[in-house]
Image (cartoon, rainbow, N blue to C red; front, side):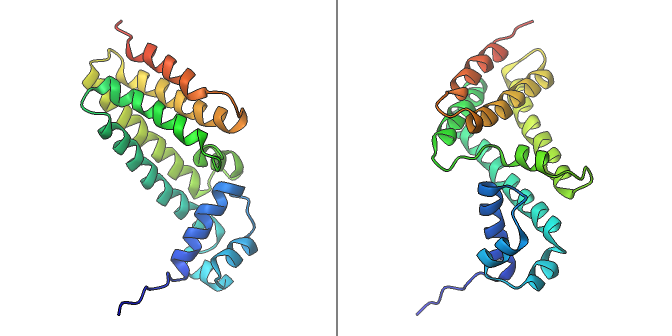
Length: 189
């Protein structure tokens, strides 16, 4: 007979914070986090040094998952770099259509974390740098004349798609962004 191990306090805090900070923002109260995770306040400080450390760890964990999703999406689209990049916008359309979609976790965190020295900002900047590099690598394979510039444009379209998807329900920002992305990808000068 096998027994399923119950996650420890650290994992329960991470799971609760990942869900709650996405659905309610990083301003969620500590008491709500502790109650949802069913842990004592001491666990928060022992494992993360406080709420800021927990938020930073949640962002780090989320960025790893989301970066893997970008890679999976592009791999599933085949070998053509153009198709791989456009697949991102097709995937975003599906994400935005979900009833629990609340926008971009990283943009929301950056806007809500007033302290410019909060460790979460470094994590979101590094994440965007890695996504930019992922896009740039594909643009190089495509033979784009300005891959770094075009990667920045595509990243702007991704951020805008996620923001518009959260703030303008019933619109189709992913389709508009995909159309603009096609123009960026087809640039030959």
